Length: 475
Image (cartoon, rainbow, N blue to C red):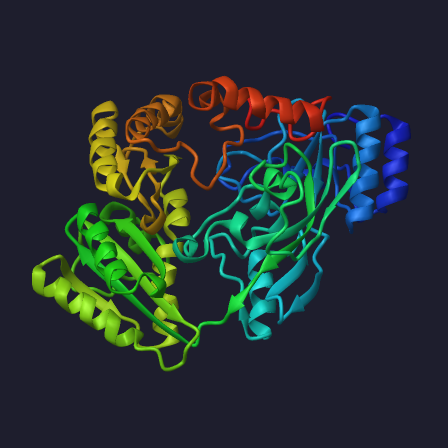
């Protein structure tokens, strides 16, 4: 059994409700749910509850609320900030949505998909593609990340520059509140100004206000033409200038615009099997550009060649390669998507998921790099991210040969160093990963006063016993 146990009456009620596949109590079964993807947070839980549908989830939550048992909602467990990991007390139960995996409907007229919370983003993308449509949200963990968790954290990803974050793609939600009530907001309306937008309150709340169980997601026509290029540049300013050049020509054509530092790219090429740089030599900075259109005869190739041709002539771009096939396109995206995995393999890292105004990106990267190198000599600064929307993953790798524990012991000093620069540039310390338990200590100084007070009042109104994902967001 787990190190702690639930009251026998509650355990019996949950067992009857969820069945043997829906209730896990043995440590060997529950352990994978108690550690985050980065292996930084290790907690314990009294049990893992795996409801098969909204009704089971609501009844399970109501039972836990009756007995005062804390609950930690969990989707694909891909959080970078410990947002889905229970604490070490062993008092909480983890409520996993990984059995709620049905795609209920795809509507071609409304361009919507109705999907349960446990469906992975990749499975949802594939279901849309089978109908000739596209779910535009794309993140590196899409093979594991689930729709419920993606909405709960308002994930962004590669295509945010064109389609927006998860918040912009969710038309309707169904969620279980901390007392077990089912909040039905399953409306496919583009316009609905009736009172408060409660679905927007749940999106990005990181499971602290309830458990999303079903969602209506907005789809798009699948691109019928697409052009992708990897470009080498001298510095982040050059990457931003190249983005401006494409935006000046046709902003609607830009589907993704990704930045990668030379340090981060080198880690991918050395640590990821099959990854290789398809350019003549390494560069200090790279941009992965993707243009897309639902029109088959769109002149995207001409647009790509004209902008890159001028950039090469001006010396802005030093080298570039254009994908000539879908296989080559996917190979270019593998290089971008494997940055997080490569950094995980390279040793201990401190992740800073920040956003600043687009115009401030080069200044931020330059200042933050210098400050971190002064703080810890030999530190490997390996930023990458979504330059089209100002979101940079300013990740810091341990110096080669340094003890990982000694490096991670300075995580607050490193995060504060980066955050202080972000603050001067009117940015945010949490762009798309959330606050979780990693950065709760920052909340009073960043979201203090009336703003934090309003958040606390909302939390208290919906979860007066503080049972839903305790220890997350709020210090």
